Length: 66
Image (cartoon, rainbow, N blue to C red; front, side):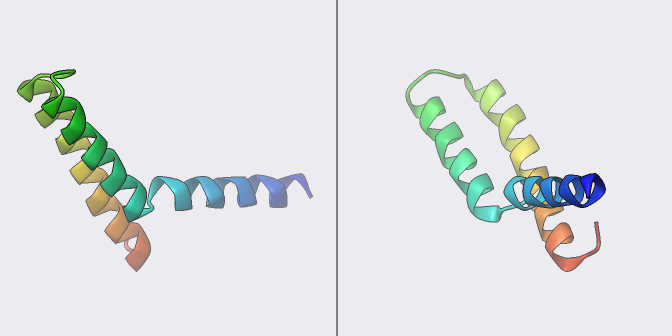
């Protein structure tokens, strides 16, 4: 029973992490932070790269190739 619950939790976490809509929202928020001067261009690019990599991983995860 505990194993089943843990598998369900992991599956839910993966769905949340790899949800393209969530990643797109994070990208929009990041751009907003740049526009507001909260972060500089260098930090924006670093975080954008991470999110774009995650978006690619999400596509692979959805296709079952990750």
